[in-house]
Length: 135
View 1 (spheres, rainbow, N blue to C red):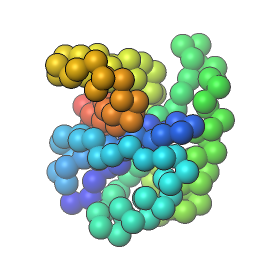
View 2 (spheres, helix red, strand yellow):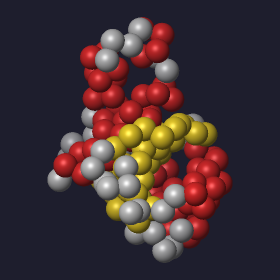
View 3 (cartoon, rainbow, N blue to C red):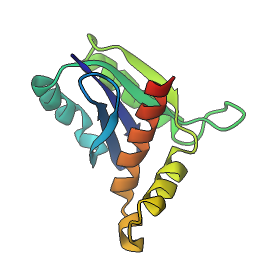
């Protein structure tokens, strides 16, 4: 069965998570440099079936755009251009980074591990995907 892939896109880094083949559990896959996203996904899609991509859309509480919204919109255009056969859906990413940091604290990670921004991005992508699955 195909997977669902989640993207927490940022200026420097992009966290990526995927479901298991039965689309029950979200698992962090990796964090990559954002400029490598398309290359990484082309390679990943050769190995794994993905039926949908979800990407976190940064918005303020009043639904206005944040400073990162145009960046994510640009990434969405690139994804649609390179992977038109895979449906793409945006999801609310508000507080996912905070939730990721809280989860790292609950897991008992040491302070230096919790400062790893790449790990925060990967966990944020995982949280977005698991919330998507729970809906």
